[in-house]
Image (tube, rainbow, N blue to C red; front, side, top):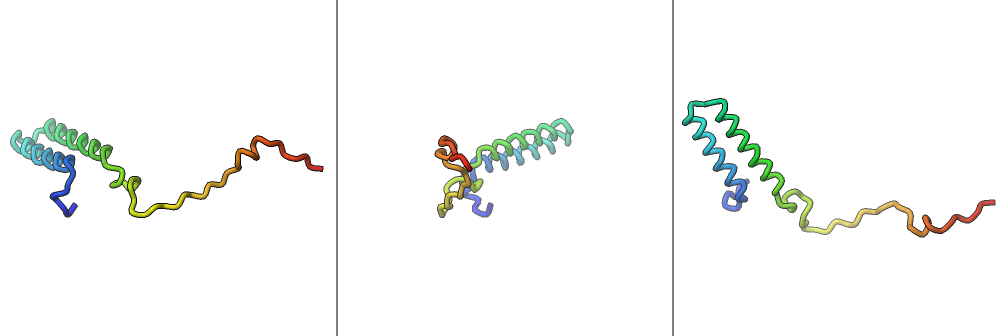
Length: 88
């Protein structure tokens, strides 16, 4: 959050909505309805920002180093298709 010039547009819109909400609440005399609407709009914008966050910021997108493939313990299809030899 230190590099203000590189903030996403959604972050700027949330900041702008906070300023407008505070001005609206103060200008209207602290009405509970207007406080609720302002908080609702902020919550909706926050959800939108959360769900539209790029994958590389969530830690599941492009990575600096490749991760090794996980070792999967499973049986091959050959063992499932061919019958087992009879035990004596």
